[in-house]
Amino acid sequence: MTEKIKVHIIKAIRSLNPTAQVVIQNEDIDTIRWDNGTPEIAKADILAKQTELQAEYDAQEYARKRKAEYPSVQDLVVALYDTDDKTAIDEKRAAVKLKYPKP
Amino acid sequence: MASILKVDKLDPQSGTDLEIGTSGDTITIPSGATIVNSGTATGFGGGKVLQVQSTAGTHITTTTSTSYADNITVSITPSATSSKILIIHAPPSNVHLDNTTNMFHASLFRDSTNLTTSGHNSSWGVYRIRSGEEMSGVAIHHLDSPSSTSSITYKIRVKVDNASLEGVYGHHTTQPCQSSLTAMEIGA
Image (cartoon, rainbow over all chains, first blue to last red; front, top):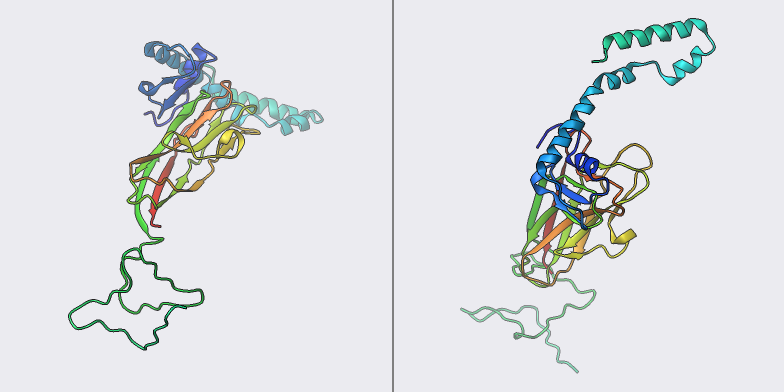
């Protein structure tokens, strides 16, 4: 079992079949129970989709880090009324972008 | 009118035990009377914990199913049909849900029987988040009278009320968490 799971198996299954009714124990692909008429999906297809979703998630790492360090909404509201504050915010955003470049 | 024997002490004859009553008789201690034991009393099993069975660990159930699925189980074989079984479920600290519209259910089962007879959809824990993605699990304590000396499996089972909900019982978004299920046999 993965210690830190970002994209669960169920996300991959639901990505392939949005109405799937399934149960998974301990994030183990061999425990999948397909309920209420849900057609089974091959494990290889599930794992491939999980890898794809994980890659998409990882590719957004820079964006999550930027978001965490960008000026707050409150800072932006204050900047609407003060030119100096707006300049400071622009500089802070530029610094964060430089710190976490887009891959 | 019953006969009344008034003495200060009853002693067995030498070499024998003192016996009161015969099999099938009932010896009654009336209301307000007291028996004081300063020696050793045996055979008074009532209320004693006769055995304890417990399961603990990381039990993660991820479901989008409207049918119940097992999360954590514990088995116990009562020693007498008169025994009661006290069930204690220490829930996981996190229940993860991915929408704020639908509900997630956790219930206590004895084998295939749902012991939760009231509550929404006969479930002990009804979860619906108002914001964010997670909430804490709720403890389940139940005193059962199975009237059986066969092996019984108690189960915490979970489901969603609508398949558009994805629920994870026993999981944080990044780290799993521990839970337990304990069954105590209490003598009658």
